[in-house]
Image (tube, rainbow, N blue to C red; front, side, top):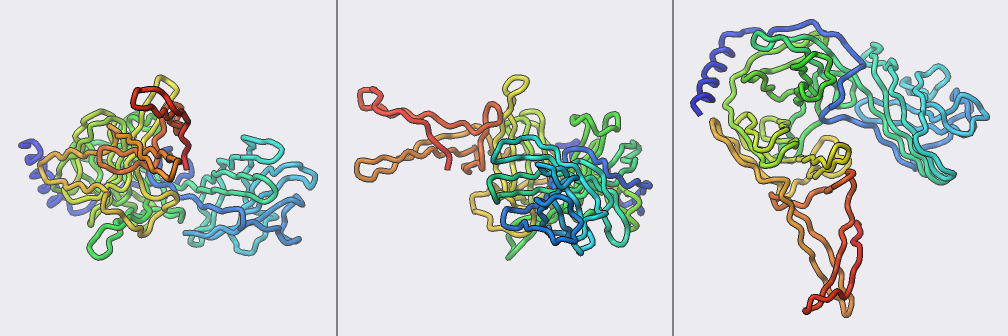
Length: 416
């Protein structure tokens, strides 16, 4: 306890002395490190595709086009290089709004699965130029395209844009990369809490800050710290505020003094998204029982994912998070969401994740019996999914015994 209090006193003095943040010249990059915390994807479904006009500039008679909207608007054509091609080969991007693809940027389609009635393909990754605020921004585009049957199609598109600099943190210099997480191809968007009627109801999208404390290549995951842009960053025993300069060409770092508490989860290998009235905080752990620093305050746990490893190749996970497809904005949170009250100079144990508790619920209708498996975690919530060996959802086996212990029925339970 005394060590924490001593740190707080020093941090407050530092923040009073440093008037201006130390700024470092930054370089835009389309090659961003892996591990963006809240990546944004543009999504399209089956009913939104259509045939292109004859003068659209597509090649294949089987080409289809679709308009995607979000933080930016653009159109996509699933096309080929030849009118006689028997499968889609590339994706064309139109950012003009005119639906013209003759000289548009392209990304190759790589077929990963195919049978007579269905196919899956990987898009890119490849660097293209995208117009943003009157300038061409280099962005890595990536995604996935699926087609099944005569009409079903699904498209996912993402863009990678980043800003890199070497920054000073209390006398030590570390490479920093800020990565777009909102899909607007701009940098400096903070992930903020959404509060309604005095209650935390969600969070906005936001960028990611990555700091490499190792060799500086951002390739060793163990040495890369990941934070949400806008949250205070804990490094080498102190809090810092990292920001993109107003001109978009620099990254500044400034020490900040904050009352600090710690949270602890019994499990190892987990990540957690905490949302409070003032800030959003991303926390992760690699060892069981780690006491991790968090700015003091009251938070709702809006995401928790715990990983498990079975040997060298098999892995699994437990996930409790926002509804599927949620990407920012408000949502209706349930009263059962764990609330974590982090006090300054104190450690709070968060009951979440393992051990899991399974119970069989039985409903009777005449001579018919329906068995349902209810799984809850240490917080009493039902996980969004539990995946075991091979990262698959395991179908439980059910046996029904009579009073003497004899088997009278056996079945495999199904999801849905």
